[in-house]
Image 1 (cartoon, helix red, strand yellow):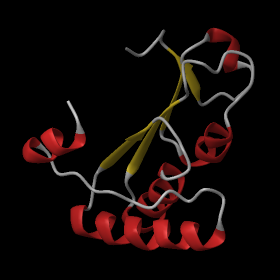
Image 2 (cartoon, rainbow, N blue to C red; image 1 turned 30 degrees about the vertical axis):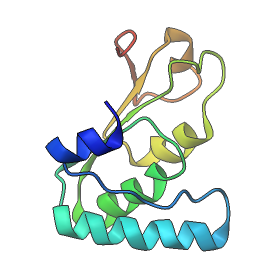
Image 3 (tube, rainbow, N blue to C red; image 1 turned 90 degrees about the vertical axis):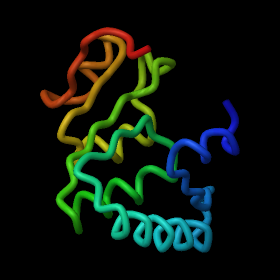
Length: 115
């Protein structure tokens, strides 16, 4: 299913990719802020990437949303940059390899691979 098909069935928003560029990052923050205050989510679930980090921080700080983060399946030995940013604000932080439990702290949870 592509995004045009998905947008017929679900609400779809496109947000600028921050690309570690200050201008793109600000654009992403403004777009995320607008969407979050329109939707007022109770929970945000993320697998990371730069665009998710500002949205999750905004939702947590301004709306009190619960944050669920799922660390990438390909992360077996080292935490992702997204994971490092998301760990402090996550209400549920899932890792997909037991080895990753020691890389994070007590808040990390392993329940197997997420399919």
